[in-house]
Length: 599
View 1 (cartoon, one colour):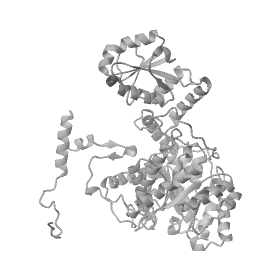
View 2: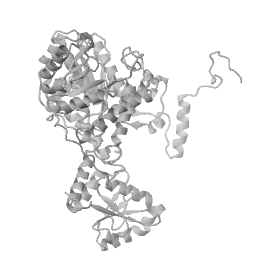
View 3: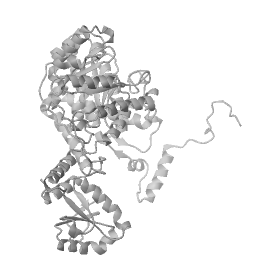
View 4: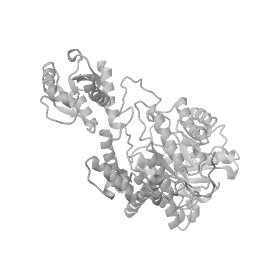
């Protein structure tokens, strides 16, 4: 065996470095073959993808896109701590909101015995009663399991009760960790109701337990209203700045005030933007702290997105939350909450909670995801995406500040209007299936057995809306379910397949998939015995030229009331409408159910 000398020379040293311009010329040649005559930057733009917030995914990144800094050092893009999550993984924080303290206690003890390391408790409206907190935490070692509260209008009572429990049980002062969860602006965003800051400031000033934070900057109300990642970041920065002003006016130094905040962000299955969001959030907060004359890394709590969770085929949510958890961990979040796959259906059962906590366990213990400090570091794509997202977040933050700050922007309706604009654009992508939802708008299963859960307590409402990616399709499926209960069968569409299987299979599969997304059952065979009133022709363009018009006429004579054709719009006689990739599926399905008398 030949051993190469260890002289530090690269094996590629004799080959000249390729330039960016050479790569662009190669791209130009490929595009020219496809009929596009573009050159230079235009050639690169042709291969780029536009994202929300004005972000762009380019086809090539270089070392010029690298991020500054090191893990644990300002601007903290690469992590809040030098060791990242490598020392023990991220904190596995499970959410509990069961209103019965006894059942809640059973659930949270089970979680703590099987891998969960901290608890996030909803107390008051939509969760545990304040006077049930002690029973729910019976048997919990408070020095080992930090508690994060989410108590809204019940902050004063819940905080006092948690502090009382720590004192009564003799928890060592330095071992008390977690968060009392004060977040008046987040509460106002959710409910439209104001909350006094003074009781929260009192706990922050008292600092009875030095490692127990008093405030949470919760960006979930904005994410759950349909905000983009940049809007979520901007709203969180504006909220945090408002809290810093209140805390410093109450007598805390800037350094002390910064140490009282924990930030909560959503993690979605769109993994690279999620990774970039957590990195950009730390960069933005480092800049805010710098302007305030101090320094401090942002402490982050990631929660898998409720917006992405589907009610139909909820098992797919396991895949969504796995990708979201991976992205949050890679992005550097210190605490991660995985919402159970049945979160959108009600209170989770024991199986769903086990899958949720095991998601982190598998990523940490089997995939060893946390053993690498800043695993996204050096990915020039992620670095550049982080930079773009940080600028988008800062721009929205400045817009809110110009409007008078977060409170004023909420009360004037500015935040609501800007988020509504973003969600409107995204809703169209969902309706046209440019953003597909597996199990809902793509590959739906009409015969699936519904997953039923005990109803969850009603969440606070009255402020920003709560949206879900599946909401338009869920409304359609609910109409179909109601029809099934009354008629004993689902509304139907007859797929008229023309020509050989090779000609019609692809479009018949496409049409069946589309109609099932709205709860309309596709049937084949003989039209006369199908009991269908609506028809969709399925075949190739060549067969359509020969048979579409005559087949449409025959079907109408046999009783068809409306005829679709699976393919791009044309002018075939007897065809009423067309379904094709990129059509507005929600509009097509809504009108179909209307024609069939499905209310």
